[in-house]
Length: 358
Image (tube, rainbow, N blue to C red):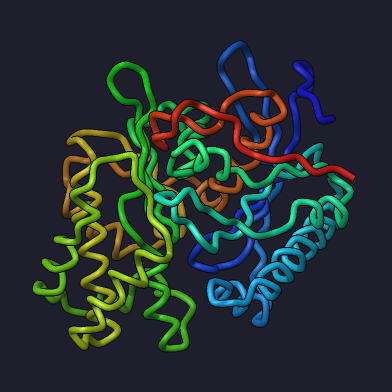
């Protein structure tokens, strides 16, 4: 069993695959603790794009047969293990622990269902390193949202900021609520939507938001987006692919916008929705791929001019989620809750994850 050494800390490799299908992020970090204060140092990090066949399989997994889905779960776990082994060989490192988010295919907490594929046994078998994975299932079984999970890392590793905002496939935000509990929830879809429209034009993403900048905001579409029922729900709340495909895409597509106009309108929607959740004068850490979208960041600043948005170094922007999943693995082996009921709405704080070792 992996144990925490107070003298040396613990090294963990976090694996993160986002809903936007940009690829796999790998982040190796050392974590140390002094009383209740945690600190970290990133040792090395990498990103790997998915082979076309695997990317297509992950994008269509929700419609597979049971056997096809089970096979993908196994194959993807082996793929992750091979990537871990390649990472170790390239950087000449050997983590004590691998913590894998997996890739979310289904997320329906209302019926106590969530599924992140990528066999932990396959990762452990291929890499030879103990693996913690399946971080959401216990929380969902306890009537929680199973998301977001990053806020516990925000609390322990990035507590100097008033808010931590991640602009990934979906945006989520976390902060300390009055009374000392952590508050966090999903705001809206971000790159899952933006990349959908650029990929239809043969581009993986809208670099710097240049296409959105050329577009025109269509206010009837913007108003319709802002009236979606999800935005009136109180937290804890989370979003998944099903919501986007059932609510966002049909709405935008029904207006017949050009790609540039759809991007411009949706960036404005992200900016408006984000502004509702941050108090004036707050200091906000912004990470995730959306932080590199200059046009989006400009629109967010215009919608909340009194807010100070801080985009950190590229390593932190790109790998914060992988870093925090590495940290969730550390919390698992230290027997510390990683799912906070104040965030997810579960019956109580709980320790998410399952351990595999060979």
